[in-house]
Image 1 (tube, rainbow, N blue to C red):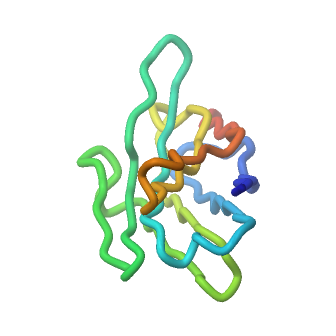
Image 2: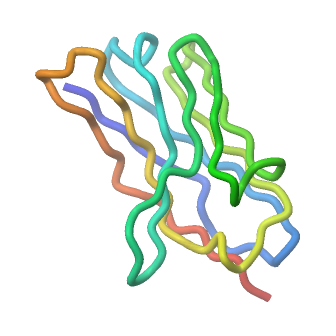
Length: 118
């Protein structure tokens, strides 16, 4: 069983920065691709950034150059550094573990609120 716990959300002014963390329990974190998703009110949940077990990254066009996803396998922790934040970045942010053992299914965190407002 895997538990994912996000932290680091909050209120920030436009142009500001915020860092999110996702702490994972269990032993499969190191061999799993990880993702950050976000969901704004009334909208679908969208992929923001992803990182493979080997560290290769991909970003949604809307956050390229502003957000950085990273991981520390020794700490079983996923990170998302968000810079130059915009009001449209306001959403609940979720971390997602893509289980390499497909039949066991993926895991989601409970989400953390990020609000960008002056």
